[in-house]
Length: 573
Image (cartoon, rainbow, N blue to C red; front, top):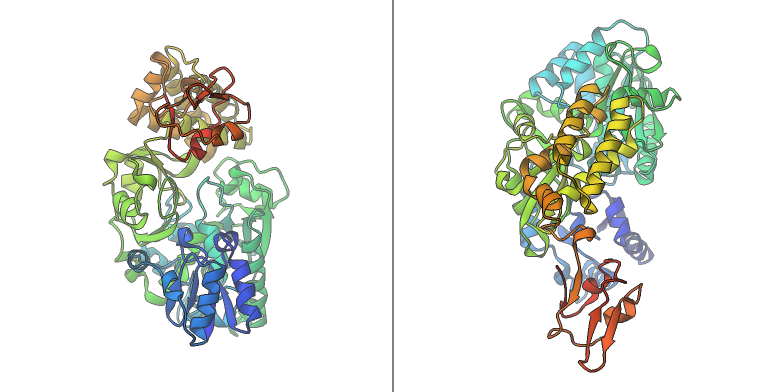
C-alpha cells in the first residue's frame, strides 16, 4: 500500500520531510506529491483512500499502525468534513494533478491522461485547428492582463521566421501569490505539455521557462520532468514520429518584479538588465533574439492540455460571458484557510473568502481584500458580492492579476497597506521612466509622512495628482498600475486618510505614531512575562499595587508584551 506525503514547499516547511523519511525507514512505499492547496492543514498524508492532516510525529506512528492493520488512533488526524467538502467543491483544471500524482514520475502523469492533449493535436489536428480550439475555449492570459491566448498564438504563428520561441513566464513576483510555484512543484509535466501544444501550434522549436531562482524545489522538479520527457521521446527530435522538433530549457531569474513584464523578461533572457521596451514591435513580431516569440504564464499553459483533451467548448461552458474557465487564487493574510483554491469564473469574492477560505482569523471583521498584487487594488468588505471575472474586478479599481488575494481585517490600516505596496513598487521600479522612478518615490514619501503623524492638508490631492501623472507617463504595466493601491484606498477608505492627517489618529490602531500601550491594572496578574520580555525595559513593577505599568517614554511599541500577555491585560489606545 502506498503512502502519499505532501512535499510542496508548504508541506516541507511544516515538517513533511521528516514524515517522509520516517515512513521510508519503516519500509513503506512512500511517494511525494505536490501541494493540494490546503496549506493550512499541512503536513498532509494520504493512504488507503484516507487523508490525514496536521500530521506530527505521533500521527505518523498511528498512520503506520493503521497501514499495518494494528490498533491505532489515526482517525484523530482524518481531515475534518468541512475541509473535505471545501476541497471537493472546487473545479480543478490547472490544479487537477497537484497533490494527487508524484511530480517526479512521468509514469504517474501518463496514467492520468498525461500527454494525451499533445498526441491528439499532433495526430488529428493542424496547428491552425489547435489555435481555433483555444479560441473556442475563451482562454485568456492568467498572468494578469487577461489577453486572449489564441490571439497571441495566432500572431506568433503568422509572423514569418525560421526560428520562433515559446516562453513560460514563471517569474511570480506579487506578494502573497504562489499559484505558479505550486503548479510547477505539483505537476511539472502539465506545464511541459502545455508548452508543447503551444509550440506545435505556433511552429516553435525551442521553449524557455523563465522561473525565479527563489523557487528551488520547482526548478528541481521541472529539471527532473524535462529529463524524463526526453527519455520518453516527448521532447527532442521527431517527437511522436511526426517530424516535430522541440525542447525546453530553464532560465533562473534573479527575482526582479519588473521581469514579469514580457519585454523586460526578454531583455533579461538576452543577458541585459531587465527593463521594458516600447511596443510595437510586439514579442510576436520581434521578441527573444529578435525572433517571433510568445509568452504565457504558468497557469495559462497548465489549462491547455485539458482544453485539448476535453474540448474548447467544455472550458467555455464554465465562467461568464467575458471570462471563461476557472481561476486559481492564492489566499493569504488574515484568513483561516490560507492556501490555493480553483473556482469557475463567475464565483463571488464572498464565497471564496468565507466558504472556501473559512472566514477571517480570530472572528474579526472582514475589511478588504487586495487583488492583483502591487498592480491591483483594495476591494472593501461591502463589495464582497462582486463577481470574479475580469470586467467586474476591474470595475472596482482592482485587477484580477495573477490571482493573489491578500485578506485584511479590522486591525489593518489601509493607509499603511497603501504605503507597503507602494514601497514595494518603488523599490522594484527599473528606473527607466522618470514618472515611475521619481513619482513613486514622491508618493511613498507622502504616505510615510502620513503614517508617521506628519500628514498635511492637501496630501490626498497631491497623491491623486502624482498617481495620474505616473499612470500616464510610465512605459510598462509596473509604473502604469503602481498607484492603484493608493487610489483604491483613497476611494474606499478616505476617512482613514483624513483621520491620519486631520485628527492625528489611526482608526485601526496599527500606525505606531498614533498608538500607546497600556496595562489594564485590574486585569494584570503580575506574571511578569511582559517585564521579562520587554527589549527596552519599559515595563515596571509597582510593588505597592502588585501590578505592572508601561513607561511611555521608553516603549518602542514593538507589541511583544501584548502578544505574550496570558490575560489580555495590555491594550492599545
